[in-house]
Length: 133
Image (cartoon, rainbow, N blue to C red; front, side):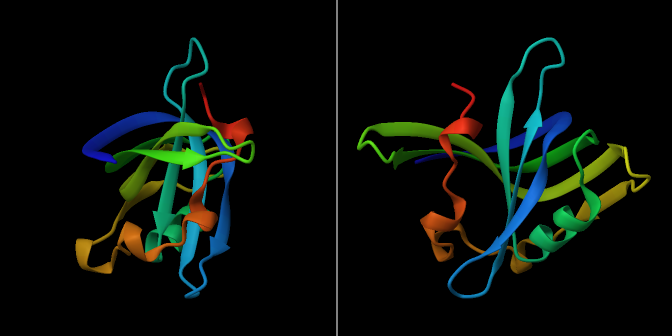
């Protein structure tokens, strides 16, 4: 697994979907398109309070700026092949232009962020339809 800090700007491509881990920790994922000329999708995963805030304030079509850890992980698909998945583990975001009227900045302190290792992988794996490559 590789980890690097990322700051990305894009349009929300898919509405946030919230789930819960076995420990009842909220996990919200959504996809942003970072290139208006062609489809360049990045999956964003929010945990804990960030998950709640993202689900409540972000919707499809919003222009957002996100900050977090860029993670490239290997996952095994249903057919047994190994695939690389790129996602951003969200630490903060700003809704720049909202399609629903919500806009503003949301910051999350690092002591409230759930560690990636505490989240069950079944809750955060990307479906094949969301992988942009």
